[in-house]
Image 1 (cartoon, helix red, strand yellow):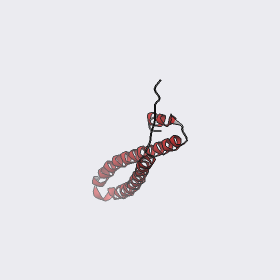
Image 2 (image 1 turned 60 degrees about the horizontal axis):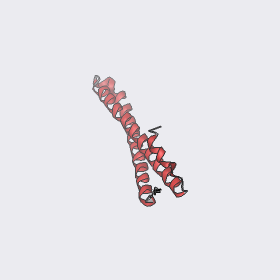
Image 3 (image 1 turned 45 degrees about the vertical axis):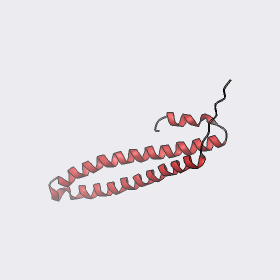
Image 4 (image 1 turned 120 degrees about the horizontal axis):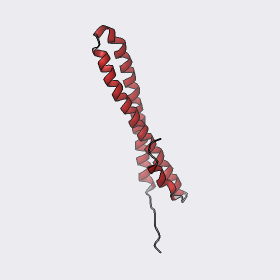
Length: 103
């Protein structure tokens, strides 16, 4: 009977997890900056005859996508971190984190 061996380079996986965490933080900051820009554009909409309001709607779509991407990055960072911790303890169930989808 063959035995399955599961190996993991903890340093590499931890670095990848931290990279996703950094990207999530960066994307959240971008989302906040977009929110400020949107509020400014909406306030200026009265003077610009609607041009800035259209731009605000456009930036709002981008902001929503940035927030969603930040959530994905954070989820991946957490999944990788949990998988490393579980693997170190000998628990190979960590693989199920990656099949659960984004919560």
